[in-house]
Image (cartoon, rainbow, N blue to C red; front, top):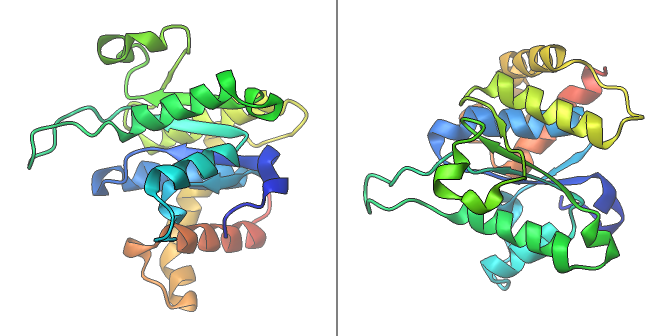
Length: 208
């Protein structure tokens, strides 16, 4: 279920590629956000055909105090020979909300991810000063980036180390087929709400 407005302080918008080769990192991001005690949100949760896609993005971004923006995919696709710029666009909307929005919107915090820490300077130099973090294309490093960032955002909240959180994600992934079987789901084709449901169930059964 989409987060209620009252959960603004706990909601994290995940802006990243939705390609098959990124699925492992995407699932790791969603798991890490949930394991840190926050609510993962994504454009993949949108299903209302009566609302424009950009309108849905505005709404979700407005409802999230935090945002994770992975701008690592810049290569042209194999069909159109053009890159997809949805991630930089959504990052721009998020930064605009923080700059020009209400006091609550101005309190937004974000984490920018890339494969290499300073690679963005070649294709998006206006981000200078934003201090993107590098995951090197590795889900384990992505989990550590999320954990360390959210730990800094909520210094009073104790969290397991990045290494231990990665181990928890590894254990979750190993048990995913069993959980999905019990819920009559397919582990390789989980919709976003199905993914968050199985993560929530695993976290309830495996508290920190």
